[in-house]
Length: 176
Image (cartoon, rainbow, N blue to C red; front, side):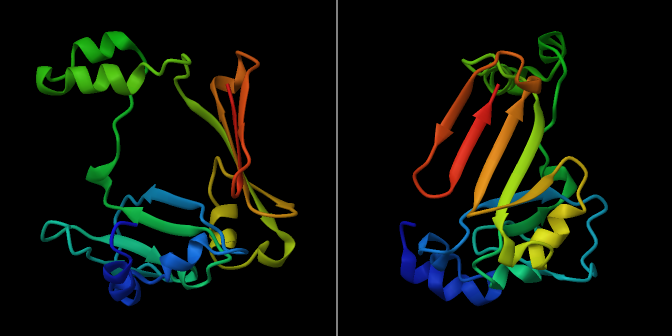
């Protein structure tokens, strides 16, 4: 954070003391989802308008974000979703103004193309509660019990048989 004093002033509106998420025992993992339809009356969520957002833009912030042992969970408006394209041929048919950005977005140096698996590991104390319970209900997200917080991402069914492991803070494992 560049301005932690400003961040602390915004925490009540945001619905999480996000500066705590870097402290021991906290969960720094966050999930940004796309809500379609964008229902501002959804139980367990409140709307949030950030200080740098255009008028009319909102996020849905999960009530469980107040617990720093839970993963942070929010939903964006549908128009904020990244578009996906199944082939580079589709990129060539895209608007020329965004074509180069799409080429860059779809051409990762490792050759990965599509997220095919996501596993969130959480301590037993948070299993089935708050935001973890919400994530357990999402298709494509697997939640497991473990000794601490960890995230595993699998791309393209791990077809290359390669992996990258980051163990500073919560463990991050990327298989591709």
